[in-house]
Image (cartoon, rainbow, N blue to C red; front, side, top):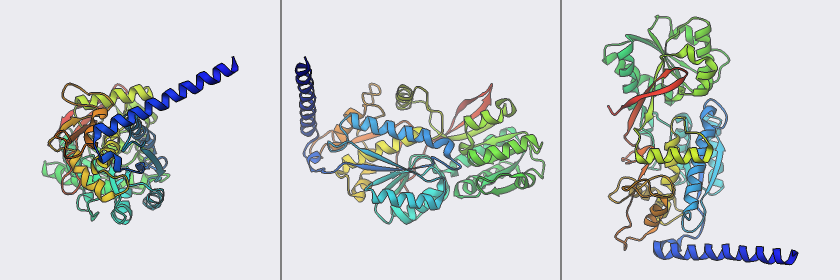
Length: 429
């Protein structure tokens, strides 16, 4: 009996190996000669806020990236090799982020997803990725300053600039309030969003009573709150990250500084709202970059829920998934897992060209959009094949990278109602 079990197990293993070899051969034939030239696995780095001021978002963004990696590898990977994801914690700190990026490069990554914070993404781009020909795609860095950054065209993002969100947030504010005090994190994200809000709010006829920057993760913000609410504004605009905002929002409520708030993407945190008390924030408005439901967005939500048992609820989770997929598709299209310049040049060839539309998940999204199983076959094809062009339309929409690596998109506006965040629609202007 013992020998029979061993023989049976060996036969089963042999069968699995045989199937894998046959599958690889089929992919090689289907995808043309280009796949044969790829000799090493693709390594993608991720700069994530597992700790620090944005740690409220970090774990879920890691899950989005891991889901993308799983889908890529289930359809054969890139060049017949499984893709590897290497994650480093930035602690939401620019210095730590740069060190983490250098560590990723030392481990052989050809591309980096991240960081979350603009204040980390920007120094990484100027001192690491642009200098070492490493493609960098941030899914959440929204500072308008990124557009003009000197990055040798190696920095991209799958979310829209706050030059746009600031306008929508200001118009939403003017529809509900006449005056506003602004309390913002003292970094490129907070400064860029706050300045755009002020410009638009005042152009619309509103009055900004105070613009007050704050440093991250302080034990108290009473001094800043006093300045931000001195003019008795109708609303306090909270442009920060959850760890800091939770402190000053609690102080504002308990100290009767102000009880009306306006939020943006950085402060859209269900955990934070729950800790502060949903009832105390009832009726509060907010915005974040986002896109209306499409077949691709719905597919991502279903795949995420199937994998993790809950729907994605943080801002930019679809954008993170898309960033990973786009890097892998570009590596396949550029026919290299080691040359960052080839990968960079291929990015615009897999997002928004005239080609076969591809979306999230393994199988077809709908009757107009193929899944990744087909998408990577097309991306690996040579130009001899008429069907070699692929157009990825992701969980966060189409990613038509302009000359600065930016994308256009929509801004979602929402309100806190009955202990939850309720979407009220999307605005594209």
